[in-house]
Each structure stands twice: as C-alpha cells, then as structure tokens.
Amino acid sequence: MDPRLTRRYAARWQTLDDQIAAFDAEFTAEAKNDEAARRLMAIPGIGALNATALVAAVGDTWTFERGRNLAAWLGLVPRQATSRLLGITKRGGKYLRKMLIQGARAALPTLSRRSTRLGQWLRGLLARAHSNTVAVALAAKMARIV
Image 1 (tube, helix red, strand yellow):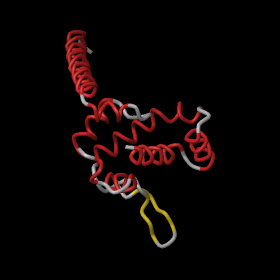
Image 2: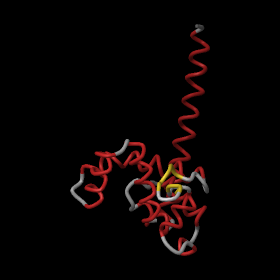
Image 3: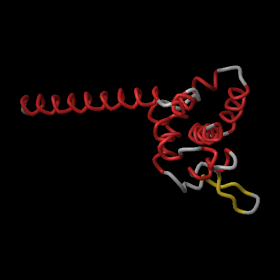
Image 4: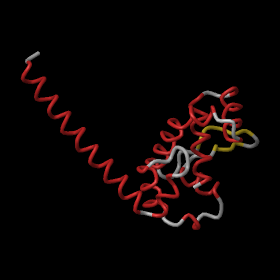
C-alpha cells in the first residue's frame, strides 16, 4: 500500500476524531447549562448525549402518566402474548432506545458490583439471563427513573 495514501487517510481520520471531540464538548456544555439535562445526568448510565436527546425528544416528562409509559414509548417493555412475555416491542424512538441501551451496557458492570438494591437486582438478573437482556432491562429501569 502506498504510504502517502495511508497518511492521507490517517489525517482524514484525525480530522473526524477532532470534529467528534468538538461535538462531544458542545453537548456536554449544553447539558451542564440545562437544569433538566443536569438532573438526568445524575442517573447512572445517562451522560450528556442521552440527557440532551431525552430533553429534546421528551421535553416535559409529566406528559407520561408513569415511568412505564415512557419506557413503553421508547419500546423498552416486553411484548406480551397471553401470559408469556416476549422480546421488547421496539416501538417508539429507535435512537433514544439505542442510546439508553448503550448507556445501560456501560453502567452495568459498575452498578452490578454495588451493594445497593439495584446492584442486587442486577446480580440476580445476570445469574438468570444473558447480559444483553439485563442491559435492556436496566435501560427500561433507567427510562422509568427518568
């Protein structure tokens, strides 16, 4: 492979990394200036990107009667067939659902080691279910907390 081509692509890659870092800094600054986003960032697994996306998409959470309704709106609740629970519905905001699941995946190792009720609940789930299923369950719980 031509070394000039490699250097050109490396420079393009570095430019993209710099742009992503600038966007991250902008989101973080915006989230720190917004009271609702600051409160959301106090929830484990919700960072600046998740907080600003939730504030922009949901706005006032009081439009949902209870936390489960927000989780259902995001598509994080199980589908139900008679008395059996199936996979999540995947209805609602695909971007927000994906972001909450990624945040839950990132927070899962730390939260499951804590000696809190949430940590005990997560350890119990991890003993019975696959880690991806537990991450989605944690994302649904985060949506309920929101």
